[in-house]
Image (tube, rainbow, N blue to C red; front, side):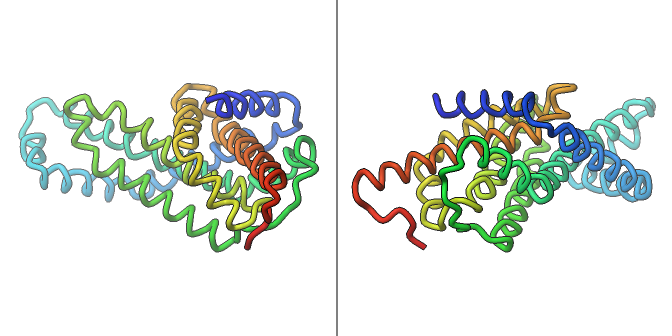
Amino acid sequence: MSFIIKATASAFRDLIRFKIAWVIIWPILVSILFWLIIGFIFQDSFSELILLILSEIGIGEWLQNMESGWITSGIQSLIHIILFIPLVIITTLLITTIFVMPALIKLVANRFYPELKREYGGTLSGSIINAILASGIFVLIWVITVPLWAVGAGIIIPFLAAAFMNQQLFRYDALSEHASKQEIKIICASNRYSLWGLGLLTGLFQFVPVLNLIAPIFTALAFIHFGLEHLKLLRAENVKNDLPINEH
């Protein structure tokens, strides 16, 4: 827990100290604009698909036969929002991890972890595969759990999905430049629950108005600090025990 608090505190400090205003807003604005355009172009197709899905689960015909059209429109609009939010979140996080993460790692490492040797255990292909895996499972969580919204249990789904997405997406990229392959495996395996905790904590910011604008950068910074701090401790422990510190 102390590492989670330390990582989040360091992320807040960096948001204030670093001159990174240009990277805070544009990923989420680009994501929102992109999906608004897609939604406008394919609005009719999305509506037909939603009605088809509702029909498959047995409520499509009931909605179409309702005299109050605003109820049907309201339910369709709610489903559009439920689908729109995860798509924006995924796109924003992917933009952050692909285009912004390298610059953030350089800023954090040069200032707070200059002694850490770069082992480049991560690869571009590994990052892409990890991003595809994280995004696919994230979407699957939302799709499978849509029926739970009808009984109220769905309220916890966004937070669990965000926790998974954050820890799966950022843990690899945060370490890929500095850690070796073996070190990445060790840190991720030995801190599984802490990574989920950090993913949940940072994921909460994605659902708070205004704060959600800085959530992707905040999340990236928090995972960078968490990963590099554990890498520093791992190497110190290996030196203490006279173990090889960089196994490829």
